[in-house]
Image (cartoon, rainbow over all chains, first blue to last red; front, side, top):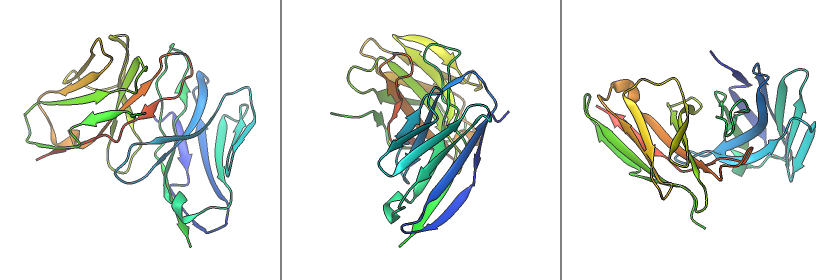
Length: 114
Length: 113
């Protein structure tokens, strides 16, 4: 069963615009909420992550917003650039075990037009 | 500092064969996880190892096995390959403490003919 639902599947944004990707989850045992960025031919790279005791985290142009009661979190990319064109995955971690496994969403393919 | 390294980068096999994929974690990282990424989908968890012990297993058949060595490197073995095993196999390492991020290698692209 799919524990993580990511939307949209694809997103086209003009340079300088705001990109917003959403992730909804069911498992209340998730305790760590990262976003990964993946370029073609490369492995996923950690972009930004948040813990459930915080509602928002900002790192440069990237912001995570977290809504624990709604079991949703989102990635906002401000001033989107062509170099941001990639596939983005939410991948919450199951905290029921010590190390935990990541549950990846299906991904969002972002295209930023110059 | 070197990141997670995986070998080989590409591999072509035929149905029924077996394959061994290798992973070297970031220096100092004691935990290694394996994921399968089918084209157009997100990675799916296969195994997690810490200090040479299996700490987690995903919903994959027994044809998939793995191990971790004393130097923390790891191997993923797949027997009796099927066409559906064609995928990018990713290795991720982490220090092993709670809530430490996982860092991924660039994967091994396995194609089954």
